[in-house]
Length: 395
Image (cartoon, rainbow, N blue to C red):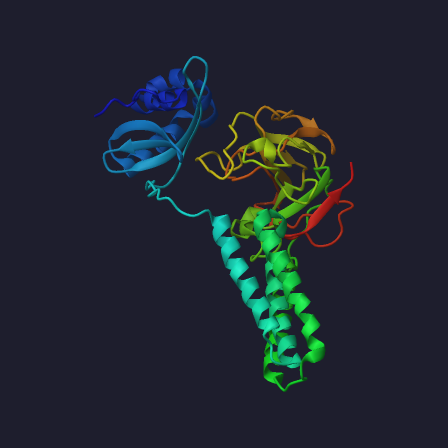
């Protein structure tokens, strides 16, 4: 077996390697906090399950995807924290084998989206400028409008890069400018083309309306205080097409919220955390309740990257006596409460961060009752909460 603690590895990698190579009777010394919280029997089951996936333990090393625990037959990802004396203070091991990705140079996804949307907009503008008669022009305009409704209604326009937004805006202006040709065009008889355009536009409107509509018979949370101040943009929320949380039963009504800056965008220039308008903004308690979990020590992710971490990152979970309200991805060092505290609505809980399963600073919030996700209701925020909606909250 190779050295389980190769040089240059962070303290948490060394602490985890010592833990995994030690006998169980040494765990209380090497990881006293983890042993107290989880128990020796549970830790033993976790270690055995890990050995079943990776074989004989070999090394722990750091990587862009997190800590990689390697064995004779495979790898798993892990997250750990180490105390000042080298003891293991927190541990999470992924429950599936890890396959290292092939990291090939590729074009940024934002650039690909900008090119594709730009081509679609250009094509639509050209069809309007080359339409042979008024009926054909109206049909092409209806098709363009249908595309616009889907992109604007099911997408999150404020999260798109500025070049993409400007391309779409310029294309829309160019397309509408073609109306100047109408006085010189014949009426035409392209009724089928017009009917197809009208049908596509109606279908697009129905699709967006259905996607934004609350789930049938979905239980509502009790009215909550909106936990943020200023203008916030919903990037995940609504039905299945608009909210990736719906796949998780307890998160079916969850929202992901990013802040909007001065010009309606979520970032200033740059990719550092402080370039995001949401980062560091205060998060207040949406309800009265008892703190049942509070974590404050998970490190921020780099924007655009996801290392393996506890999914919620730094968080505060509140028990109202009727439901559980969870607020996640908080900034490290900002959480002001601890487990067991009783809080009132409006109390400062922490600040928006970029910890856990996230690629940019935002607040995740959801409420659940008996493991079932609830649609959220906020006092003073009427209407549907769906992707693409801007919420302007009062102080």
